[in-house]
Image (tube, rainbow, N blue to C red; front, side, top):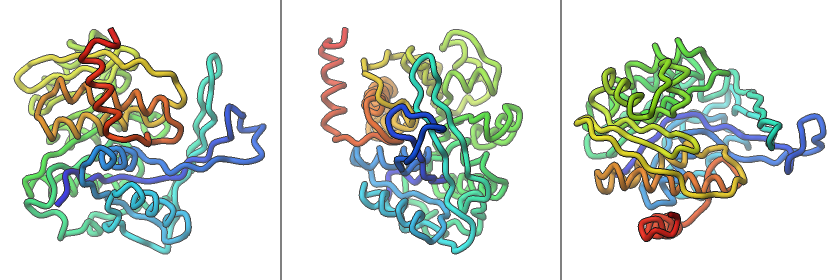
Length: 321
């Protein structure tokens, strides 16, 4: 039925226009946001069939999120609707060197944070209904109920024969490194595909070395997984369970907004890996989609699959060398 099912929270992002600072703002631009939602929408634009699981407040803000998913052909039919709680918000002030980008979260007691395992759709978690479940450490961090829901979703997915993808996606404003390490451990030990940004490996696991060595150290703890590491300007790398190491550089891109770049990368990687089982090709598609996101406003890129294919083919032809 689906290539990928994702589980996570959606929020609304409010940003002062241009590079206006918070204290200067007389209006805010609104974007639909959320790590798993970003990945879902990118996967759908690539051609994957995707469903998104979450819990939303049944008001205009929740329906705005539902409408955005539907617009990009992500199936929103498994959303749990409630008249209680709220849709989470975050405020982002776009920075420019030497001034950093600033984020203020306003997501406490969101509807998604209170999602309960009993609210997972039993009819969805069946053999043959999906190929892979994807979630992130952010989902585990936003509340005990949602953390329990993610663990139960992973259990049901594995029992149904689905693969599991997990992005550590550490956020220091949500929890400590020790909490992230302990609570994410069960899902990381089950995952077939692990996304661990280099900064997260440093903060959460204390790993500060060359990418190949950091991946080797992670593989000692999670030997079952294809472990994928984003390296910022250094590109991306991966290690497979048989010990093979892959690395690829970034695609050149002019920065418009880096928000959501990691989610775009994970979408590109997952799409290509599910299609080919080729890690090197999946890294190319992930870095290509991350570059397109880098040049796009909003939390997820808006693109056509042909643009990714063109970037990858031009790189293979040597145009970026």
